[in-house]
Length: 218
Ligand SMILES: [Zn+2]
Ligand SMILES: [Zn+2]
Image (tube, rainbow, N blue to C red):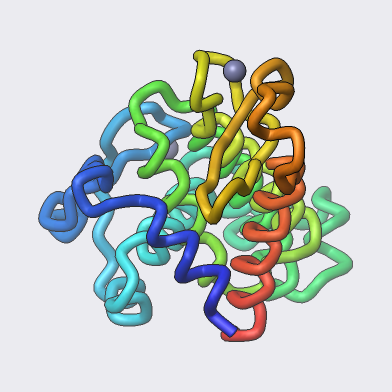
């Protein structure tokens, strides 16, 4: 069942795993917010307890909470002030919990987009941070779609042709060896009878398998 995930993990050797996100720093309350583009101070005993086994899930939960209270005003105003709530149609026609879920999902999408855009995070950190969101509750279809798209484009951006600097488009299996090639190098003579697969399809399957697996866990 976990085969896809395992082979995925194996592709990143231990040395390649950047330690961009420092566990100690997170535990001390210093967390990089991709929306602020700087470290914020935030520590939650409660969230740390819930996600004690997964630093990236904790980070995701913290960023969503921070976003809800610091990057938007309408959430806090809606539950604090009756006069404001009366003008907020979404809040009026939902339970407080449903509204919180709606706002959280909006926050998740925005944070994930900002993670991908950030110039201060390396690829591995981006990937792990986005994956952290899969552990959160109540991810709706839109959030899943953004996670899926962004994970696929991050993976694609890391794959280059074995023979040049162009992005890889195909995976070729020849004599039990795996090659990644661009459109030009796909036409090399030795690959004539080899098994050729579009890289995007392989990555899509991998990401979908990873996300599908997570969904079952929850
Ligand atoms: Zn922020
Ligand atoms: Zn090439």
